[in-house]
Length: 456
Image 1: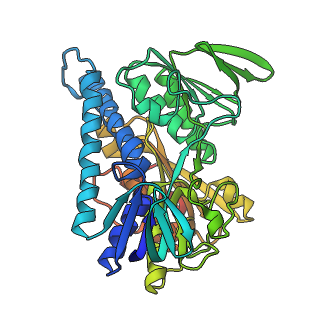
Image 2 (image 1 turned 45 degrees about the horizontal axis):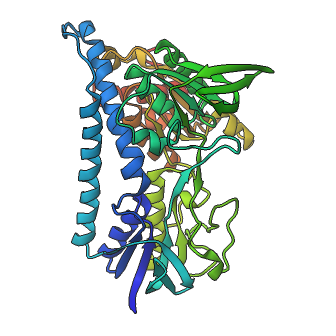
C-alpha cells in the first residue's frame, strides 16, 4: 500500500494549491480528483470560463463607446462560435498548466472518487487504498436547486449548463440575483439577450453593501435588464416562469432559465461515517486551524462553512499545511477576505458593511467618493460608481471598503491589507498613489473618512 505525508481530496483552487505548497515544503503529497481534468469547478465550469465571456462583453462595451473617444468603428457583431471556442481553449490551457505543476512538484495524481476507509486510509474508486499521515478534504460545492424547481440541463440550467451552451438564447430569466446571477445577466444582456432577474430578497447581491446594490440596479436598468426584487418564484413550466411580488402573480416567458440560488457543499461519497464526522447543514466542521474533529484530517473551501470563494479556499489550504508543518498561522483569514462580483459595473468588497458593523455594536460612519471625481476614471470614460469606506467613530479604524465601478477588483487588495493591519483612514490617506490612476479614488475616500476631503 502506498503511503503519503499528505493526501488531498479535490483538485480545485483549494486542493491543488495546497498540494503544490505542501510538496515545496518537503511533504510527500498525493492528489485525488474525480474528474479527468484538474482545477475543480472554478477552472473548468466556474470562475475562468465565466470571466472569459465577461472579457468579451467588456470589449464589446468599449467598442460600443468608441465614438466617445474619437474612434469610428464599423458595424461589428459577436461570433458566438469563436466566443465559445476561445472559452474552451482558455480552460484547456489552464487545466493543462495545473497538471504540469503537479508533475513539476512531484505530486502524484489519482483520478477517481476518494473515500475514507478509516482515519489513516482512503480508497480511490473503492479499490486502490492509500495510507496518509494527514489528509485535506477539498471537495468543493455544487449548484443548489429549489425544492420545487430543479435544473434539468435542457431548459432550466445551472451555471455549468449555461456555460456548456454553444448558442445564445433569445431570452434568459435568472432566478437569483446573487453574484452568479448578476454576472451572467450582465454578460448575456451585452451579447444581446433579453434578460430578467428575479431575486427573492429586497436587494440584489444580498449581504453586500446596500448602496452598492442600489447602484448596480440602476446600471442594470440602463442596460435594459429587467430586475424584480422581493420576487418569489412559484413555478417554471412550459417555457414560462411564474413569480409573486406583493401578493400579485406574474408570468415571464423564457427561452432559457438560469437557476442561480447558491451552492451547497459536496461532502457526499467521502464516507465520513468511517471517521465519526457529522456534517452541519452539509458542511464539514473545522476549527481555526482548518482541522476537523479527527486529528490530522482537515477541510477547506466550499465544503466548510466559510464564504465560497476560490481565493479563500487557497488560503485555507495554506493554513492547513502550516499546521501540519508546525508553522504558526493564527490570523483570521475570513473577516478581511475580499469578494468580487464581475458584473457590469464591477463590484469589490472587503470587511463589514455599515449594517454588519452596527450589529456588532460598533459606532460607525461611512463616506463615499464618486469615481466621476477622479481624473483617470473620467479619461477612461467611467461615468458612475464610487468607493465607500466604513470606519469606526473615534479611532478611524477601517472596518470595510465597498467599491462599484471600473477597476474595483484591482483596488480591493489595498483595502484588504488596511483592514488586516488594523489601519485607520488617516493612516491610509497618507499612502502615495501614482497620478493619474483610478486607485487614487481609494486614497480620496480614506481622506474623506478622516475628515479631510480634497478633490470633492
